[in-house]
Length: 449
Image 1 (cartoon, helix red, strand yellow):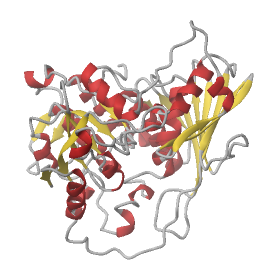
Image 2: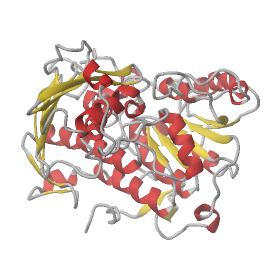
Image 3: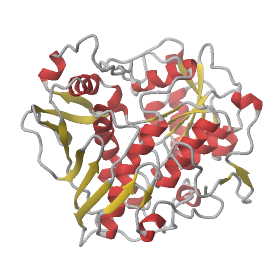
């Protein structure tokens, strides 16, 4: 069965603490399927408002025509005015909630339970900036509630989660944008235009480089602070005792919660690679990974790591390397070099730090009959436009799932210490039951697909 139409292994999503299950495919209201796009200001709800989540808040004054949101960068790096306004906030850390409410101004509705926020009928869309292990459940439930979704990267923690997100977006006719914002920056567009028009010839290898994962000094577990609902923070993930170095800002260095640099910046750098190579519809057929674990730190993501992804039809190889070999053309802490039989091109960064490419790509003018490349007006602006037009955004959920799958499969190949023969259509590993069991997770308590 094709990857675009098969259901996930489990088709029920638990939506209450009493474990009442709601079918992902059987229940949908006419209001959800026929909901019109908003004609004026887009009403936003926010789930997760610490760290990166604060950058998505649109204050009352800003929505009235004041200065644009800092997170709303246009394709040329300029700041865009927002057609949206933040009207509802949710976080399980009360300290963060108070700060966010003061930023937004006015009288936003405040929630500790995201399900109550999703019940709010006048919300057009939700911005999800909760920790990575919550992305899939929150996105699926938001789609079921009839909301469009902007979800931070990586899209998901498992292959099953990503496919469930795609299915939910299609079933409930929702716009879902994943927050790999590098695609919406001008240099990514210029690089894609240059490469897709054959200026490098046949591209056979894309080599990414990035610095290592941190080790983390050992710190004793402790009681969670009173302002944090830690039980809900862990949610669907495997239970681990509270530790300040495994939660806010540091969860990324645990494979259970974040998955390391490959699932953090990899979801930016490899997103641009898939965009430039026009490969959002497919995936690799073989994944090989090596890595060196930390021997004296508290984190379980590897110190160094090298993952090779082999693609077919067309044949090319994507490499994720920590540390890898940085470009000599453009200096940056991370990026990728595109190697063709007629030359090479560097594209650096790809996240909130911006995206850069070489002057030859900037100066290139494609022929009128060259392959089209979509030029985003800005990542959030693209999302807002698609809420009104009902078109797919530049980092739609299928693309987000495909990029997240690279990150997930790289970690699985590293953990197992053997190559994976991957079917990018059926989304299974050939002749490897152990690997296939790692494509999903059981969830915990009421929180599972």
